[in-house]
Every structure is written in C-alpha cells, then in structure tokens.
Image (tube, rainbow, N blue to C red; front, side):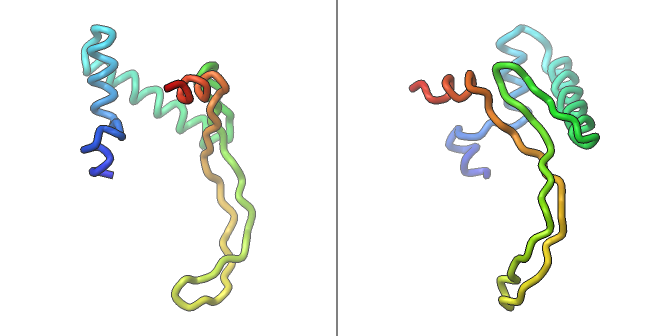
Length: 102
C-alpha cells in the first residue's frame, strides 16, 4: 500500500483533507471534523443495516454472506465459514462515466 501512495495512486485521509481544504479555502481542522463526521455517520447507519445513496457518487449497503464450505489452505480439510455481514459499494452511473473518461 505504501508503494501505491509513493506512485501517487492512493490518496490517504490526510491527503484528502489537505486537498479539500486547499480547494475550498477552509481550514484543515474544519475539514477533518466534517470528514470524521461523515465517516462516523456512514459507519453507524451501515451497522444498523441502512442503505446510503449519494446521488452522483454511489450506494453503500450491507450484504449478508451465507454460511459456506471452504478449505483450509494448509491442510486441505473442509471447514464451515460462518455467515457474516460486509459493506459493499456500488458506483453510480455518473461516477462510472466520469472515471471512464480519459
């Protein structure tokens, strides 16, 4: 992951804060509070099982993964993988078209 950051292919949270702050002339501290609040709100709502739709960006929701049979890579023995909930993101058509433009 550090290699991707070095190549400029990955933006971390502090880089996002700096970029938004400089683009909109708002202090990094204020932007940091807003980003933390957005992440916290999204996390809480997903934990409750809600779906979050941001028009022009995409939809975040929780997918239910059923119990399934897997294999232990060391021994090759079959084992049951328990059910779980996992967050998923589906990009909007607008975002997909924006990213596809070169």
